Amino acid sequence: MEDVERAAIEKFKVQDEKIDELVGNVLNNLDLMETGLLEMGEKIDGNEKIIQGVTENVDKVNQKFETTNDKLKKITENFRPARKMCTDICLILVLLVMLGILYNVIVKSY
Image 1 (tube, rainbow, N blue to C red):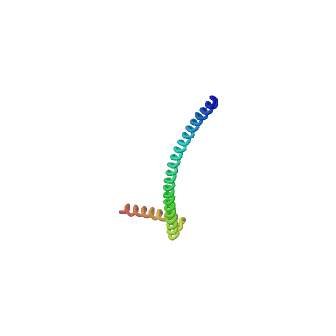
Image 2 (cartoon, one colour; image 1 turned 135 degrees about the horizontal axis):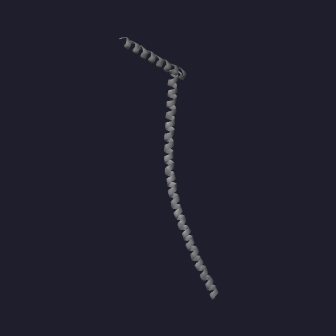
Image 3 (cartoon, helix red, strand yellow; image 1 turned 90 degrees about the vertical axis):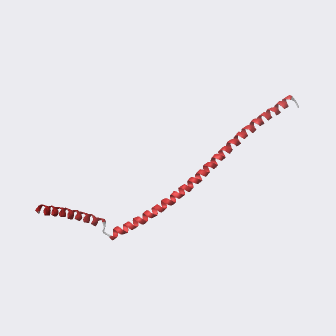
């Protein structure tokens, strides 16, 4: 072989080593990325379980709220409508005022 051919072969070997080194770096970085992504996936799975649990709890609370709301609605319907409740409260206040006046009159007369 001639010197030119040997120089070319040597140049190819050097380039081959550089390419191998770069490919090794890329593979190392891909391994690091894979590890990081696997950890992220595990965290996402854990968060998904937590979110599922919270969602189930919220559904239970909503169901209890709706049940309680329905019960309260039935109770208020069985008593008196809201517009009549206001009248009742006003009449009770008037009665209390009248009792107060009557008490003052009785206390002053004795």
